[in-house]
Length: 137
Image (cartoon, rainbow, N blue to C red; front, side, top):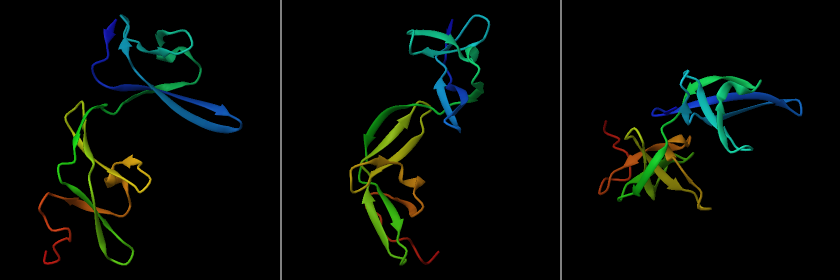
């Protein structure tokens, strides 16, 4: 058995109550024949990913978050419908296993998310920078 060093996911598709449900599981290891192995939660062991009829294939997975660091004074700038701007302080940056960083902001209920995924996201504001975008460019 070879531990998985690069993130791959086993993908599954099945019909539940008349609708198609997609799910995935991380590949944990590869067996000696090169088959992807995933966790069988019921039996508490590794099994071949293609063990079931619902298996549709493998895909490259995302790199997992391995750390988080403070926001460090950075902010996320959002543009309102009226053209105004607001800046929220970042609470953290997530660090992925490949070294990439992603900003983390919170909403008024405390739910954390990547602000770059929001439709109103306008940019990141560095510590000490002006909150408004430069209109002379």
